[in-house]
Length: 260
Ligand SMILES: Nc1ncnc2c1ncn2[C@@H]1O[C@H](COP(=O)(O)OP(=O)(O)OP(=O)(O)O)[C@@H](O)[C@H]1O
Image (cartoon, rainbow, N blue to C red; front, side, top):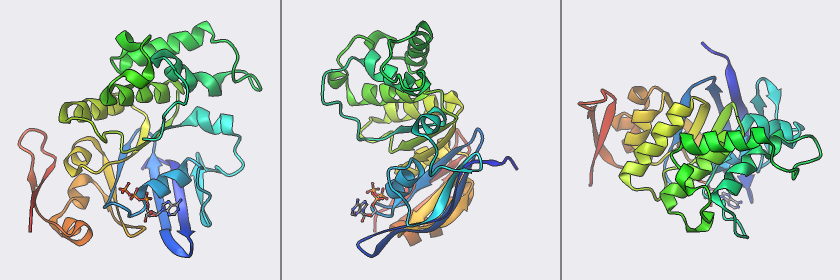
């Protein structure tokens, strides 16, 4: 088994005495795409925020390449881990090109984050925009492109960081069905070690190598999509009856919900 690139050991976090994440140990290995699924409010985003150091855990540790991320310089962390969340909303006008260029900041010389873009930076930005199919948008105002295009541009920004790991919090949120599949296909093609929070269980089944199922702050199942997406797990965690069969085209598990 490949060694863990990013892992958590017994992470805990509470708010006002209420446990939000309790004793979570998980691992992301080199090259795999791992999905984190679970109902609203179960703690997925909080767990992810501890991984990218926005929340400081009450106990436990996050290790990147075996090193505790606490105390790791921001620049060094950002060269290895890129994050895509729903929260990017620039306060001033930025072009698509400028947004993607932000991904190059960790690669600037130490102490010069706002140095002029180098030819190498510009090459990376062009390559990443091309990779996500957004070259034609490069001069557009980021605020004015569509939701689906924004998500692709933000993925390009994450890739411009040249990270080993991608952490994605509901990257398919608000996207139509075609954009959801396109974005997840792009994530897979990018070939980075990826931890992705998803709500759509069929998207998770199709694009993830492994899944963690979270419930009330704890991981309650882990394994291949076939092992995790069982009718029992779905009933226990989501309170929904479901039929799980095999998708006729992809051979992955296919979940069909039966409203009670
Ligand atoms: N900063 C905070 N202050 C207070 N409560 C918080 C904070 N962050 C998260 N919580 C609470 O912790 C719980 C888990 O929230 P979190 O956003 O991690 O869940 P989630 O699984 O990502 O949910 P969703 O699927 O709805 O996005 C929720 O009850 C939320 O209100």
